[in-house]
Every structure is written in C-alpha cells, then in structure tokens.
Amino acid sequence: MKKTLLSLISLCLMFILIFTANGYILGDINIDNKITALDARFVLRASVGLDDGLTEEQLLAADVDGKPGLTANDARMILRASVGLENLHVHKYGEWNIKKDATCENKGLRECACDCGDTLSEEIPADEHNFENDICVYCNKNISDVLPRLYFTGNISGMTSKSDVRNIEIKYSYGAESFEGFATLKLQGSSSLAYEKKNYTINFFEDEAHDDKLKVDVGWGKQNKYCLKANWVDKTHSRNIVTANLVTEMQKKYGLLEEAPANGAIDGFPIEIYSNGEFLGIYTFNIPKDEWMFNMDKNNPDHLVFCGENWSPGTYFTAAPDFSTWAIEVGEENQESLDKLNKLFDFIINSSDAEFKEQFEEHLNLDATLNYYIMANFAYLQDNLGKNMLLVTYDGELWYPSLYDLDTSWGTDWNGKSLVDYKNNSTPFGVSNLWIRFKSAFSNELSDRYFELREDILSYDNVMSKFEDFKASIPEETFEKEIARWGTNIPGFDISQIEEYLEFTITKLNAEYAEMKAPDIEDDPSTEEESTTEEESSAEEESSAEEESSADIESTTQTA
Image (cartoon, rainbow, N blue to C red):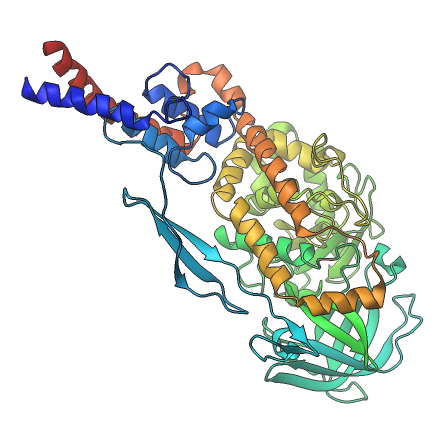
C-alpha cells in the first residue's frame, strides 16, 4: 500500500513538474492532458518529416531535450516520461563558462549547465584575421601565411580561346612553402569562357623549354597539372569546393573510389593570384578533370572518363552517345572507347523495368548512383543531370557517375545572378531517362540512403560549418581587393542564402523521401510501424518494454 501511494505521488509530481507556465504540458503532443507512448510516436514521426502539421504549441511541447529541433531523443524522453522513468522540465542553463579561447585560426569552446546536471556545449567561432598592409593586427601573421599566393610573370592579356596557350614564369608562396619555375597557361571551361574573369589550366615545368615537369605536392601528391578556378558566378568562392568536399565524405562513407585523391570528386583551396605584380583575383587551386583525379592510367584502354557536354537526347539517355554529346576526358577518342559507353546506354534505354532493377549493378555502381542522385537533389544541382555529368569506369563494364562543376548549387541559377524557384520546383530529374528510371526502381534504397546521410554528412550543422569555415579562410582584406579589381557587381549570393535554402529544403526533402516508402505502408498496413524509420522502430521497441512498467503501475493503482 505504501509503495502504491509513493508511485501515485511520483506520477502526480511528474505531471506538476512538466506543466509549464505557458499552459501546455511538455510531452503532451495531442493535447489530451496526459503523456503516453502515442505522444512519443507523434514526435518521432515529426522528427523525420512524416508529420509536419504540428501547431506552435505542439512544437513547444514536443521539444523536451532543451536542444534546437525535434529529434529521436525528444521522442525517447517522452516515451520514458509516459511510464514515469523520466521527469521532463524546461532546462534553465546558467552562464557560459569558457573552456577554450578562440584565436584567429582556431575555434573555442564554451559550456553551461542546468541545475539538473544537463550541460550544453557550443563552439566559439574563430576570430577573423584583421589585416592591415598584409599583417594581422592580432597575431602578426603575414597574409601569405594564411592564404597562398601565386605570381605570374608574362603576357596573359587578350586570351579568348582554349587553343591560345601562353608561356609564363611562376612563383608560389604559402608560409614556409614555396616553389618557382615555368608554366603553360590556357583557358578552361565552356560557358565560362565568356565571363570577365577567366578559369585557367596550368602546367608547371622546371625549365623554360618545358622539357621537365615540375611536380609539386599541395595536398594530393606530386603533380604538375592543376586548375585555377575563378568562381565568377559565386562571389563567396565556396560552393564548388564545399559541395565537392561533401561528395568526398559521402564516397568515403560507402568505400567508393578510395584510390582517387578525393574519392572521384575535385578538391581545392582559395588562393590569391597576381599577374605582373597586380592583383588578378581570388581563385581556387583545384584538382583538374584529369586522369590523376581518378588515379587512372591514361594508357589503359579500360580507364575511361566521359563528360556530358550539352543538353541533348544523348545526355538525357534517350539516344545513343557520340563524341559531340560526351567528351572523353581520360582515354582515347576512338570507336573502342565509345562502344563501351554505348553498352551502358543500351542497357539504360532498352532494358525492361525488371531487367533495369535486376541487372543495374552489372552496369552502374549502385552506391555511387544513390549518392549522385541524393546530392544533386539536396544541393539542387540542376546543371549536373546530363551536362557536366562524369561517367567513370576502370574496366570498361561498370560505371561510376561522378559529380563535377558544382558552382551552380544550393538554389542559385546558372549565371549566379538569380535564384531558381526551389520553393515551388524540385531538382529537374525529369529531363533524364536515367534518373526517371532510377527513382522508380530504387525508391526504397533512395529513402534509406537519404536518411542515413541526413544523420551526419548532410545535416544542417555539418553543411553550414563547412561553408562558414571556407568563408573564414579568406581574409576580408582579400575580398576587398577582389571588389577593387572586379567591381561591386560580382555575381553570386552570400552564404546566408544557403542557410535560407537549407532551412526550407531539408523540411521539404524529409517529407519527400519519407513518402517514397509510403506505397509499402498502404499495401500492407501491418508493416506501418516498420516502414517509418529505424529510430521509430527502436523507440517503439523501448515502448513495449516500458509499457510493461506502466502496466505494473496501473495494476498496483487498481489494487490500492
């Protein structure tokens, strides 16, 4: 009897504690003045976008762990509270305590605590260098210690064609690292040839006659060929590199193209370039679209890389390819190479739906294709669904789709001067027979992969931290020099635009990818609990165990 009374008192105190001053009960999502496993289920579904119609009051009641946003942890705490194993309350954190001071180059850390023992940690952003006459007033570093510089000596004016190759002298300086020599310089890109600020392909040599290659290691092994990207449509210079770095993380997660320096994606870093002593601009020093990007042997006839050159039936996968629609980047431009690509196209165009699903992994790597689709969708890579698509093979049979040229991304249009209407339109996969068929055949796999990636690599925090870190790597003084050189009308949008894009798109895509599995639920209602998310399954398994405790409490109460 005494135990029963204590249990009743405990439950009453629990409800008193979780009733907030705003008039709602923490954890009571369906507003029935009690907390049950059903409330936990509501929260779990909402955390993955299956229920997005919660009112402001319901959202406040659902966020019980004191951390921004709804997660499986909120659902877990509510589930435990429903059987008296958790006391919910509004955390009241004290003042921040500095655990690690921020410097010009390193982030700091601060922490605060609630009386209940819960702690909250937060990074302190690194202080930006403040350069005056190329010297930081805080740490006394020279700007060339923070941002690499490349100096050209020679005539590069009037270049308009890729066939125009200039011979120059070069010098590279970055802190204690430096090299100098000679180079050939030519224009790089297609539509970018018309831009005011040009992209370049550069090859380094030890001698003026260009007999001996100058191979330098700037992070990816010793090479002599690199790409100098102007990023004219992105004034932050971040979209191409950061998006590629996210792709690299995705490829690493699934063990793809591990022998390539960045797992089949490009990589790069910001750099200042000077021509004959005058500031030419901010560029990124990139891995080129070359055999070493994929760790290939150009003399091996099975090592091939094709790149989609335009928007046409040949890149929509509705007609056979040729060298006008697919340029060969690695390998020989001959019929033997084209026949290997034709075999892939024949499968995509002519296979039955059953054959497409069953034989897909004989022709295309499934993990690489899932990653390609999801990244193209998540970052709105409308310029990479045919044109700019790389198709990569090491044996002439199995192909890896690979993302390249990613500056038109995160809601920006092709010229950087406007945004696409991403709120009312989706990434236009419908232009491509490949992507239409792929989504139809592998909707469950796409849904699973999306939510796996959303847990870490494609989380809001991971994406934004990479953009913020990249922006912080370029001193404000360098951006000021860029404006002085190229004017105030440089195309592009600040990274605040990416924040706005993500806040809208994540909610939208969470619902869309959850819905991809909805037909299975409708066909077999008994599997509804299994087909939501792994978190829901886990939470509801815990619910079963904890409801037994609830039943014991109810039984004891009835006895009393």
